[in-house]
View 1: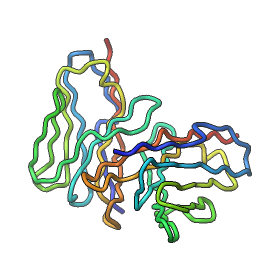
View 2: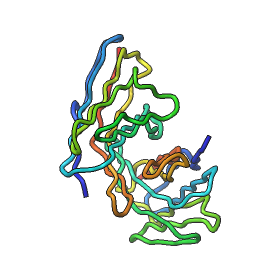
View 3: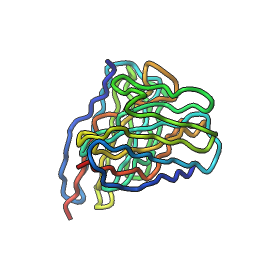
View 4: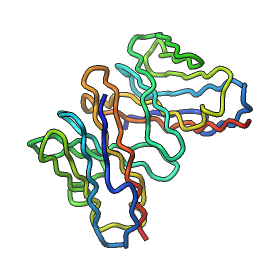
Length: 112
Length: 114
């Protein structure tokens, strides 16, 4: 079945270091979304990428959609303690519109 | 944007009992989604709740175990029936924005089954 995998599963960084999480889909995606879930919280939408090779930036966060539209990455420059949480990518399922399959997630811990 | 209220926020239940989770949205939406998030895991879609029709369940989830109601365009319930400890999870209600495709989530209902 359709799968969306993320690596790494966990990442501990010192505050100020950079962080990257990679997302790989078993199928080509029409778009990809990224969410952040703080500890004890619910997922919150960060961004959606649609075009092949698209790159978008939000302050210290850079999102990229692969040329083949099967992979994506999220890079955080100079992490801060507020970046702590789990980052999920999500892509539309092959079985229906508006239904999303979530990646396995990368849990980020930032050490002050 | 959408504001979603879920209740209960958490509950502790006995094995064999059932619990109904309510989800209220502050605007009318066509589809509502129910997700499960097991401890330390990702989100898994349980079903899509459509107003006026039967819910659509994903592989591995059945109506007898997770009956869903959708009486109007702003409300839905998910029941977890005949619970076992394996049902201990966070259950999340979600709606899609309709324009950007963004999913909005409720705060979640943390269920512990003893």
